[in-house]
Length: 115
Image (cartoon, rainbow, N blue to C red; front, side, top):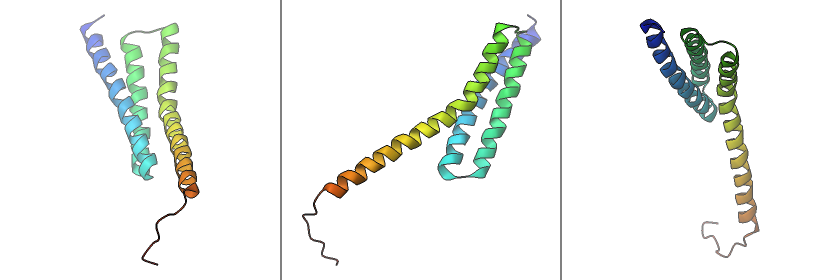
């Protein structure tokens, strides 16, 4: 391995981690606050992740099984934030429904004075 390839692989590996983190962060912020700019930033971050992955594969001269691993990683990075968001929404919806059900069944013992 040449020094150039070692440098590129190091930088590409770091970019994979950073772009993956930015993708997840911007995706969550975009969904949480319904911001299209954050969702666009998440898509741009994912594109950066894909480019960094291809650079890493090229610099390390990965072939065969390792190409499958890289492709699987890209698919996992794409789907994981979406699945985590869906899971979080479902958990909080169930929790909110249970809280509403519990408060609806509690008798009101204190008379409101502002009525």
